[in-house]
Image (tube, rainbow, N blue to C red; front, side, top):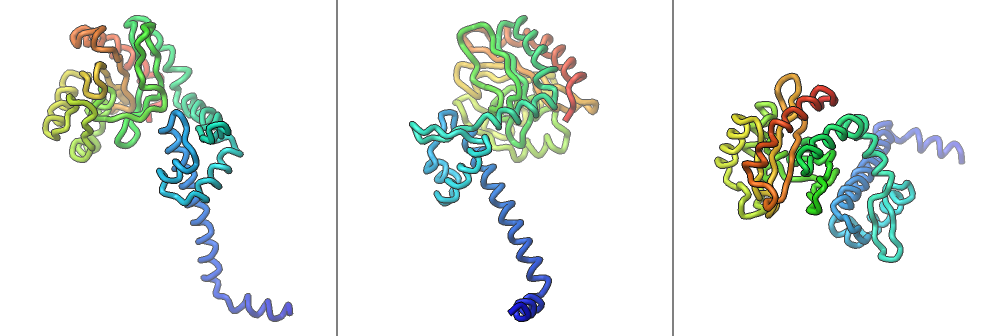
Length: 276
């Protein structure tokens, strides 16, 4: 019997065994990708979501989704709420996010600077970086006023409708800026959003000339903001810093008066933060 098993094994080409191993590795990699996609989807659901909802959004079989959520929950990446049968991002994600923030200096280095700016303006201060075709909020300090800016750390927002996004586009490397100007989706989030490509190009050119970006109810009705770039040694933006206010509290002109303060803070941060 052992002879027959050996014979069969010897008759299998080495390539077939290697192909099977590669296939299994590809399957494992694919499952990792699916699990990560579930985490991304949950990140867009602040109130959590059921396994069935996540399955539909991910376009995965329910059994696969349920099994992956179970694995993620076991390791702390996902929390399960039995009463509502809903899943939320777990504390393990928060822990990893904090480590990334600390590694890039966003927590220990950036936060004191943002707090100082907010103390002087009395308004929210936001630090963002570019993540593909979006901006990612990495730090925010709310002002003392009751009205609160909703762009919390971890928020992915539009590059074309926000002040931080426009600053990141305007001061990107030349080739990347041209790509964004040609290909960036121009979303109509409000009736003031710029959706015409030539008008957006003109807006980015104005931003480059004056050294700061403006958002006036283009991203959210009732809100306006100014933002300045954090520039690396080559003069390209690796982050942007903004002050955001409700329109009833500050006129655009009064908001622009905070630009020198933001520019000083951006220069300090650019000198102290790791440049991506």
